[in-house]
Length: 116
Length: 173
Image (cartoon, rainbow over all chains, first blue to last red; front, side, top):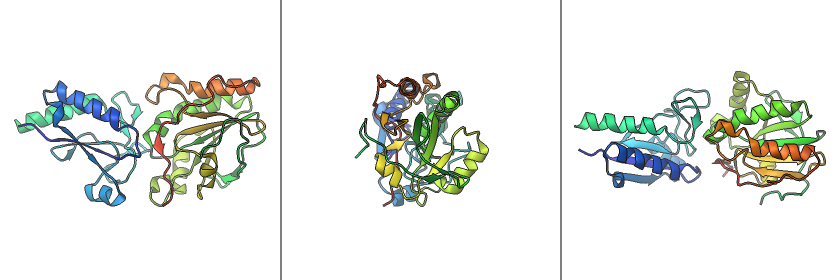
């Protein structure tokens, strides 16, 4: 069964276009129709709090946060909900505004295995 | 409305994380970097900007990092969080708090980071991003370095303005 793949975004952060392109490419790489990737804009602090939005972009696979971010000190950002740009750490250690594509592929494959 | 290239930049006095006051004066060139604690673009570029601050210190260039974000809505940008970050990391420049956001407003800062290079007479000579790619550490804040080299040589930067790239400054509502 194809998982739902959702990109949550906020317009105060310029990374959405790149995140969407990388997410669609990752989906295609693991055999998921890239049209299955949907977008949901988060507009307000209240919406961010209600959805547990940890920052833009956030990728949900079947409603679950697919790739965790970090805070400025390198800790987990999962407890923070706000209209802000999310901080990711790439596999080579760099700070980035978008998830590592390898992490996206891994999360998608894991979900496919789990739902198969 | 952003400060125009060639315009005299507004003077100011802002406190750093120790309470000391800093102004954009008395240096052959001054670099103002509007930045913050919670933006991935600001964090990705931080080390490159810090390296430039170290490299140009012996030529008398003053770097001032300024956090103007609304700390009530974004506690990760509070004065305490700023202090903790400076204590945790090795900063070659003071980290100033623009609590009223008046300085960011006067300069027309838009993003974190947003870089302004002033000459000795406080004239704006460069404004924009540190370099062409936040994702490439090899870019070395080259646009900023080129602008500083030009200002220190008494000439105009060949590339004087680039679009600032990063998270929007979090203005008070």
